[in-house]
Image (tube, rainbow, N blue to C red; front, side):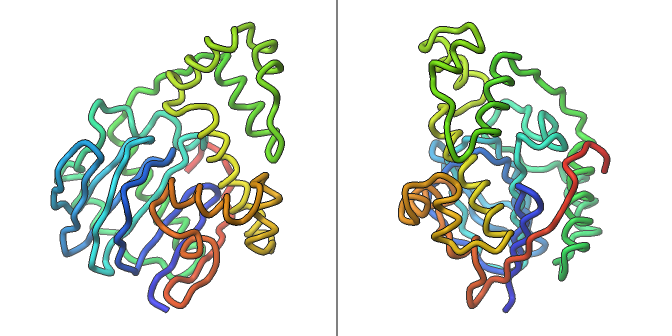
Amino acid sequence: MSGKLFLIGSNVLLTGIPIFNKLHEHYSVSLILSKDRAFRFRTGSTDWIESKSILVRPNVEQQLEASGEDVFILLFDPDSIRIRGTLFEFPAEYLELDPDSYQRILKFLSPPQCEPEAVFLWKQILNELKKENAIRKERDPRIEQVLKKLSQSIPENPSIEELTESTGLSESRLIHLFKEEVGIPMRKYIQWLRIKACVLHLSAGSTLTAAAHEAGFADQAHMSRTFREMFGLKPSLFLKNSSSVQVIFCKIEDDIQL
């Protein structure tokens, strides 16, 4: 088994397998790195390019063709206190790392074989990216309040009436402001929370079907469709051991210290 997929809290580190996915978009920040062979990348609004280091903002439609096994894919959860505002405050849909940053990362970029090695590599890369000193944009506190309520309510959803009452916003204004501040509609954000909850239940030993129900999906098929829309891949690759990928759940405290 050559590939390994590490789930570091709500973040992902995938190494050791070729990736050919379809156009998709998700709430995560994507970092794609290759040690040797360049990969092909495009967004829904750009042509294909070849690169060895791409950083993609959340909610950008994207597609990857990476035939080599030396590719590292990292998905950073923007809601993690370690991540928020530090990685994606740039105007373009994506950017290529500057040569100096890429070379510094190459010095320690090696496929992890176990949980401690994966967490250590993830922290090293995150520290390197944070050297760019991006300025964090604070969200509207009313939307932060909504995000907190939503994350605490899965698998149920608070009613729109409850959210409007707690924020003092009308329904139309809340819906508009949420998308403006978060970057995606509330419905899609809730689906993202369900996917994260599904992974959490799987890490605790639930089956794929049980995890889908426990996360609030109508059934496994609903979860699978949502997963393909967000990642352009079948959930079986990410959410259970396959013949080519070993899934390893990593524990990490969600604090700001690295």
